[in-house]
Length: 176
Image (cartoon, rainbow, N blue to C red; front, side):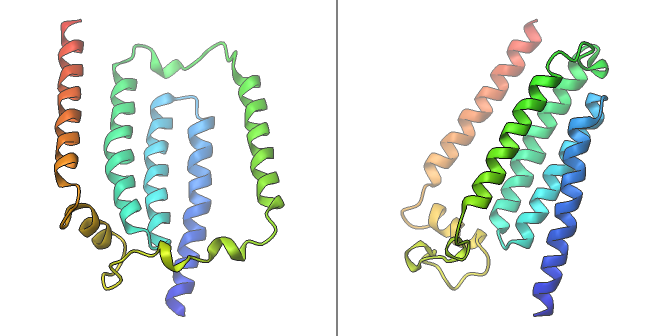
């Protein structure tokens, strides 16, 4: 039971820090520093996944968002001229604020309209992974994807196609 309390405390601490990092991404005028706070936010979301026993999602979060998306954003910012100034006219500030308020209202109304949250947390027996002996989700998903009758070949083909796309993008940018 004390382990459960530790995970709950870690979850709430990470949740509060994630809100602060997300606000920093939105409110900072320096685009590069906002991108660095976005990297921090992605790491915190991975930590939240760990506290929820979703280790595969945490690993995917770090590999995809921190390792790929964040690096791509930072390179784009560094290669853009005068990116530090941002949008001096601030033409979209009020429409973005209105859309944000509408999305917040929709989220709050959907949370409040849900009558019985206990049903959401129950997992049916059919939804469980067939490999109950493995700890965590990473091993079970790995055996399902790459084990007997898995999807190793399509996974490798997708990796080669992504590599070809990255090399093609680099070649196109070098010509300019």
